[in-house]
Length: 92
Image (cartoon, rainbow, N blue to C red; front, side):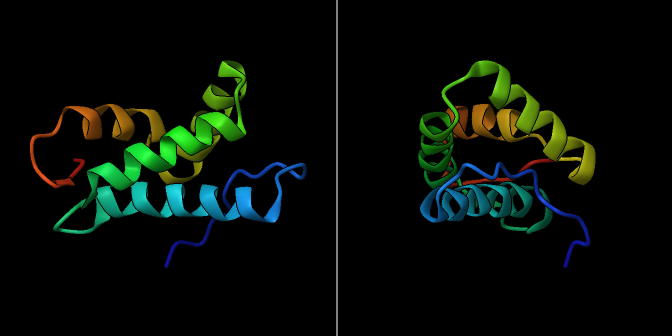
């Protein structure tokens, strides 16, 4: 279990917060789980992330914040998930 807090915005609804937590957890899984994480789930969650945070600047800030605390990139994982030919994406 990781001992850091995820970047969150107070104006997110409970549903939006749940979506963001799923995205953070799926990206962590892509890096930490030997089997990776479901690529389509990451793509779907990232699309929802873009709807929740339509500002590109906000998206980049959230990715930077998440990367600085976890070492993992939301955007890089999303791009890799788009190009993977398998069901799961495994990040190095």
